[in-house]
Image 1 (cartoon, rainbow, N blue to C red):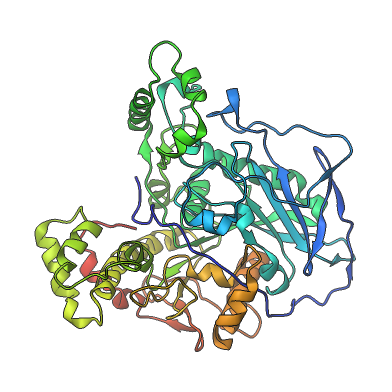
Image 2: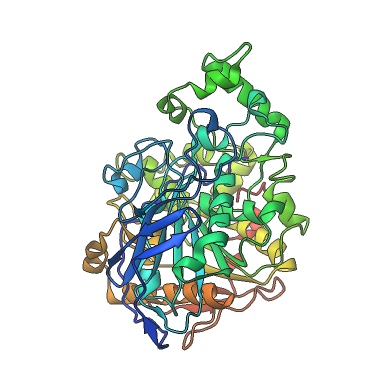
Length: 525
């Protein structure tokens, strides 16, 4: 099922690394040419790292390969140029178009990027690997948006970072009877992610990486994807730890319903009769982009049960998990409605709550109004943000209890009250995706971040990169000289609050987000 954040597109912008690399081991400058299983690649040196872009990890999913599991990529002779990005997957013109700076879009989009330190250990020691799955509501985004330089040059030791593209919208998630190959259909975007992970297993050693030390990381839809990979039996062994940022272990649509919906989708676009599959494969991609499908599908070979059911049933591998969210997650949703134009008024607060939480009864909405009275906040938009966010994060707390029963689970909250963000009619706080500004360089606009953020914010960004790097290296968030994040204990829970004035462990996370109040209502995480 679509979760409460399925329509949120992150607004990441910028960052440059400020911390020095912690590793002091002897190093050697590696070659810009590497040999992988399909041929040779030439990368480039860039700002303290070695970068290989536009590497095909699967065959182009076009023509007869549209809505099929990813096929192996072809090989090439000679040295392939890997010094520039390849197209992103087809998507609409939303926030990503602003970030994308005109980057081309094409169904021929199954490419990944590998970033390594500019110098590798001289003794040939293999480095741990972070594989990044981008967010964007399963309708937008590109691995190329996320520059890995800050994580590599400012983390807690040397790591290799892989960022990937995967099929989006209807091209990535449409299930239909005509597309069924016998194992079910849908989840093509998730299968792409799995194919990229298999590519890492086969090839990352050529870049100096260790295929047995892979951490899978994602934000928003990317975090939900990470949980889907945890739940997928065929993804076992492809990674050894995970980080999930601001995205739930979501439910999934049962295969029968997904196929019924997909059959209706086909008919809506004039595909019926004897060869529905051929008709669908002949539709222009812009038609499919305009009518997106974003639900993952359970009941097939890839996801026998949905991620949430697998988590609750203890059917996920017992790997270390770093998981968290932002203090004001839903401010970004409130911003899309009230942050640019006419501000939310006190008179409109009730209707805004109904629009934000349409599944609640009138009595429940009244209860929310009483718990979050508009008179308690400087602006009605802040009351709406607080109520909506607390509902979402109360669902995270339920998930944490389930995850920590079977897995070493470490929890954070991003609590910067004024991160870099867009102009708004109300202060957005730590809105959805705002932590990304400190982890990655977004389209190489690092000068903006360093020019407008405070030294405390830059210090916080450096600390968070060290936690992420240390977790990738060791499976535990305990950088030298910083407060370790303890394993989550539901009886005495502690959460790392990342804040510019000094990060600290807090024990009132559930109370702060009024989890007891929201426990009486349907979970929306």
